[in-house]
Amino acid sequence: MLKRILLVALVLLIAGAVAFFSLAPAYVERSLNPLRMPEDGWPVSAEAQVLHDGLVIGDLHADPLLWDRDLLRRADRGHTDIPRLLEGNVAVQVFTTVTKSPRGQNYSANSAEAPDNITPLFMGQLRPIRSWTSLRERALVQAEALQDMARRAPEQLRILRTRGDLADLLADRASGQRVLGAVLGSEGGHPLEGDLANLDVLYDAGFRLMGLTHFFDNELGGSLHGEGGSGAGLSEFGRQVVARMVEKGMVIDLAHASPQMVQDVLAMPDTRPILSHTGIHGHCASHRNLEDDLMRQIADKGGVIGIGYWSDVVCGGTPADIAGAIIAAIDLLGEDHVALGSDYDGSVDAPFDAAHLSALTQALIDAGLDQRRIAKVMGGNMMRYLAETLPATGDT
Image 1 (cartoon, helix red, strand yellow):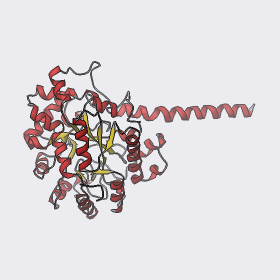
Image 2 (cartoon, one colour; image 1 turned 180 degrees about the vertical axis):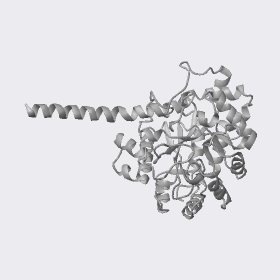
Image 3 (cartoon, one colour; image 1 turned 30 degrees about the vertical axis):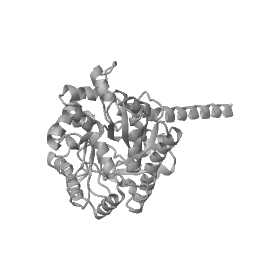
Image 4 (tube, one colour; image 1 turned 180 degrees about the horizontal axis):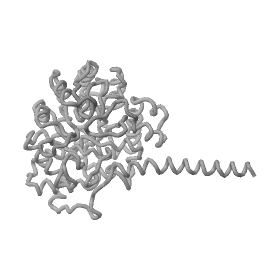
């Protein structure tokens, strides 16, 4: 009788564990990435759809690799995957790897010593054990997942490592192929674990973009959301990393960087950083958005600014609100320095998913932008920047 009771208890325990590991991560993802889109979608005119379908579209920031989904399959949750990106006519998507997020994360002040949200998420997702304790391995595991998808479906997904890869992708799309180019990026430089040699490891794994900080100060320097008023700039290690990124042709992303770090990076020779996902402070006075003068300095050095889709940075929850932020960015920075940076699946809300991106094209038309400027913002500026910044070869 006791054996039978123990057997039943074991079966129930296993069933509970299976249910937890199957359902809990999906529940967390669904709750953290709400989609605030009308049931029938936003209205899009035939004129806007034709324009949208003829654009070359790019997005500087999305985090779906965090959620351990097969992105080759259309999901019923979150904001993006390969089928929805292709349906939305996206040509190039930056997929960023998230490796650490402080408990109680906020835009004002976070401690690097706070308990980490990503560790239990990776355990719950049953990711490889090596990624449970190493931020470098956590980034590499996400990169390997994207590389596996590209191997399984090369007709749908290619990882872009060089300028030539980008040129080939755009030529193939111009000839009618529906294929997505992927650029690998890291949300913050902490996966380097304080060792410059790890930059080569990430580069060899396909990473071509790296933010320097995320929501906390790290070995590279200060975060916009770090402790002590976010006054820290680049550390000596951070300067070494930035100099090496310039040598390798890697994109330097100042999203989440402290104001002093932004100024320190801009003062270094040959830097041409971007800010991948943000709003405009003068348009939406959120602490998440850098002050306007720093935005101008990034643009003046040849960088581009990716406008996000979530309500905290555009101060509203509709396509028209995103269009308003884009107009504010053009007014502040000029039409050649504004791009898209959705932050899809980055624990934010969005008014449309990747499949319904034409709603933004409609909103830009409604806001009075002409086709030439719409083409620049929706992807032209991003493609020009990448064509000028990515390494000529993969051997750097």
